[in-house]
Length: 118
Length: 115
Image 1 (cartoon, each protein chain N blue to C red):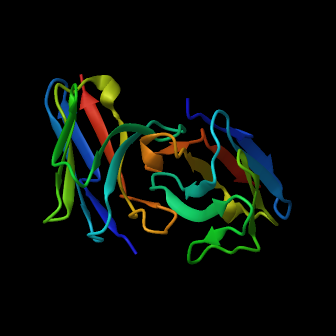
Image 2 (tube, rainbow over the protein chains, first blue to last red):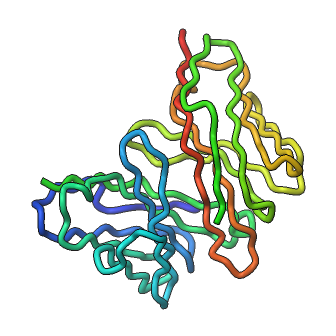
């Protein structure tokens, strides 16, 4: 149980275009999902906390107008990178908490999406 | 906010030896400390976790210790094997007091087990 999927697993786009990444909790409901960005040989940096039915909470330094997050249902959160530029190339990973498992302490991670902006 | 520091950044050990990775955290209210193993291009995998009401936890070759007073916790891997080679991250979680219980990650340790 507690499986999180992401789609696509990798995407290549041209500079200036927008890319949408989906994060789904397959067998549990997630009122809270998290979006991370990981550059090569670096740690996971939290970008935003996605709350079902409300606005996302962004970390300092993350542009909310550039990284649009929508959490319309208890099993789906989307991250849209708008007007992508080469510096946005990174590994984007989502996670979700399952309140039924370990009291919601553990986060379950998606497989990640490798974004390359040309 | 929470700050997690992790050492060393790289660690090489001979197969069969032990490996120890250490982390410190800044927020004394943090109460959940997971350790993740991440292989290149893959998702982080939870390998062991510990809560603040426990001082030590063990699962086969892996153990974690927590010193709340000093605000540090450590990962111990015994009898290392080549397949243990990966990047390991520690993390600390916000307490469940109205927050989203975010995880703050350490900077990672590249463990290489030499055959």
